Length: 442
Image (cartoon, rainbow, N blue to C red; front, side):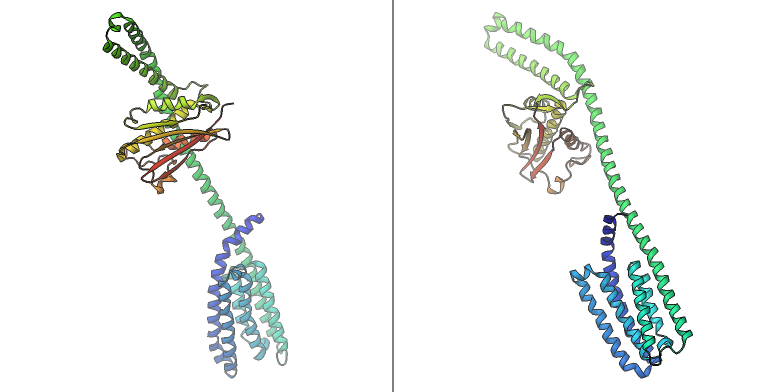
């Protein structure tokens, strides 16, 4: 039970105390006025004077509502509550002093206010004890100042005991009630903390699930690409050797058209080699790979990502503005994966929006020892309501079966693992921009 916890608890119950005090003062003022009926039945000779006093006391009690509406009043709810509670107590002991003294039945009205403090109003143990002591003291004073003093000692003792019993019972009830409220507050706080922890665990599990799915996919692609390298590289090399021999043949040299065809064939074979090699770099990782401290050129990673997304980028203009030095530290394969995700998302969005001149700009610049890479497209942008959710696992705006919604979430985790941040900015209907940063290679 630290000081901070108690401060939080007081803040938690402040609104409840304010509402209870407002309701209590209205109820108390109404009961004071209804007491005119008691005056009529017990002391008709004092009816006019007592009625006037009751009206004045009720009016004074209701004025505290104005105080409770002010900011300083809300900050001193307990003090104002005790103030308006003291008004009817003072009124009652004044009536007791003017009527039958210790023998007056109006002492029961004092008990009513004591029970209100202890049971109905959320005041503390100390306030309840002080209010009870105040009530008993002014009652004793009224009995002593009554004309003739205390005439029946037995009645005085009995009424005193009833008042003290009420104070004791309400003080004990308030003590345990306050402890119970505080324990309930602690349980509520603990439940809120556990819920936050559960949300964090669920979020972590969702991320892990997405990463496992991605890893399984990468393993499958890695196995496939390794097989492709083994099965395709030899035939491709044979083809390249045959093309080179053919290009040196005198017949081919005599035919410009044949030379052009051979050059195209050679370029195609070299493209096959690059694609298979990119697949291996991107997807296949041996146990010692996948670390985030391996130097690599971002420029080469961008080239690989563009080649691997050439199908999606068909018809899309890709512009690059890179500094001469793009050597960074990190997991090249993972960064290629991030770039593939950003490029393919941009291309698919622009194709879906049927942009006339789809364009993607890839730029980079050094800032404070980190390379900031920016991928911007002139597509339809991202709706403002979705901007805060694009990195959530399994969040997607595509049709069912068109994607799991894991790409950006995994990309965010990859960049975070590199000590950077993947951020997004967008203007709906105009553009979208993703930015991430990587550390410079030492």
